[in-house]
Length: 389
Ligand code: FAD
Image 1 (cartoon, rainbow, N blue to C red):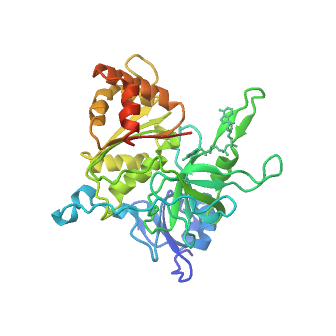
Image 2: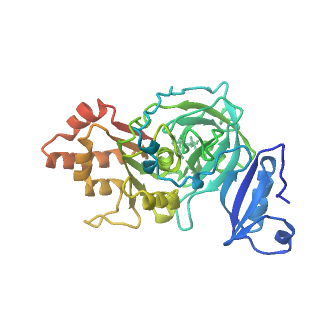
Image 3: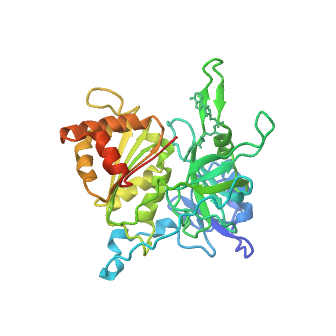
């Protein structure tokens, strides 16, 4: 049923697992069966209907890859960036690119179409976080890793006015998850908290709106914005990334650019070190992909988790990200002495003081004043990048 080679519309190949065999699924003519996975070719305009059908059949979508007119899927890019060095020639210098800013403003947003909206939190985890891919083909929107876009939720606020935009860090590289320059992805946690006075559960407006989007839905997008979290051009740089929760979004873009894409103008040969703080193992967003990268590029990518509800610090406290920074503070301090080491911090606002404290202790051990070094060297040289919210 979904196997048609539809010439008019873009086609996507879905990999699905866990489909129960029954009369209804047997009627479909899905193409290939391979170690438990089933593959479906679905035209763009039937994605919504298809996803609902898969849910009804008890299946889980593992991946979606574009078929016609698109580049190879990310997973097919297996060569390590560090081993593809221009046939031994000197590395090609990254071409200076303009930083796109505010191509679309709130009074004139562009329209993105949802391609997929997938849950990232696994069973036993806390809350709900979605990886959402938008089709932006046919728009002028383009962006760089580390930038954000604005989303204007549908509907009106309590005063009957259109909702204001909310910013979200872009989770895909400039080429998009399918490397075809036609998409942008977000990583969105649905805001949920209890009202202190009434005890009522309150859900965030925009994050709830994004959470319930279905393939095919149209969304108002503004931006891109942000120059704080851009990657340096130097492919030999040391990039230390400190993420809590959805703060992983820009770092997913960084890591995909470094290791999953084969960009002739950016062959990463430096060190990327990600510290990732979450509540539970089931909340480690993009876990399989991160661990696959680490296994594949152990000399270029270090991955350190802080899992606060499961791991303890040596003195018995909860292991937050600053606990891991404290553990490795001497090494980080040494790395920071190199002029091409950059630190990026993204996620919850509350993460900053603990990190400062851990670094202050390391600086003191080395006879230095952290605040002085932070302001006088790291910030001055544009090597300390913070985006917390
Ligand atoms: P709203 O309906 O706007 O509610 C938010 C308000 O609720 C707060 O202003 C506060 O008044 C109140 N509130 C929130 N928590 C509590 C609490 N515990 N107790 C009492 N009151 C509370 N979010 C992501 O999920 N992923 C991202 O990648 C991401 N990137 C961002 C990048 C930037 C640069 C910025 C500035 C923000 C980013 N955010 C991201 C946050 C995002 O912009 C929204 O703020 C978030 O989704 C909540 O918006 P909302 O409309 O759902 O909530």
